[in-house]
Image 1: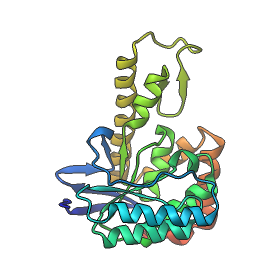
Image 2: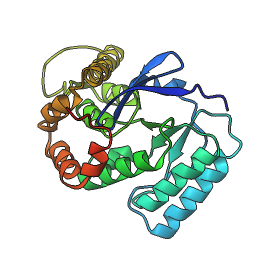
Image 3: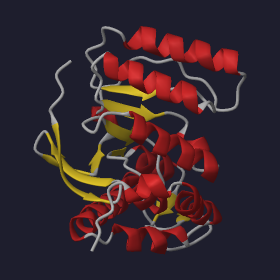
Length: 245
């Protein structure tokens, strides 16, 4: 596979502002434009033996693939996630998608442990990706070193008649904020995601992403819990790239 080299320009804590293929990161991509290697889909909470089988099958399917992206599987087992990610790197994948993100966003400890473990284990030029992230969590995910986000969430919620803001979701059947068709709503949701990504990039450039992370953490108990776990238990990870003044 041919993958453009990733160049890190600025760190703000573990967050990375960089360039890949002429585009700035963190980056929002259209989901349908992401070429993803075949993989074995498995739930998050399953027996270890089944998760091990899923990792082996995912690696087998990815071997020899010309796709740019591959899924990091391993379900609830972080060591299997790291194993899967490292072996995908050995297969020359440099854009790796964290699987089961919808589940992780409901489990703050698992979210923090999974993302930080992967970021620490992977090469600096390997990009971590999410295909399903609520806008309120994007600053935190970028703060932990995630680089690429897809717009799949915009379409998912748009088809359900749900309007996305930077911090909340509003079912328009219940909250009469706007009247719009599904296609228009999908585009509005994409604009929200795009705004958040742009905001995160500018915050990294100015060294103020942490302030935004704290602001958005107030949007939900899970978001706040994840930030507290990150602060209390992952200081070495956070301090590795934190500037001293």
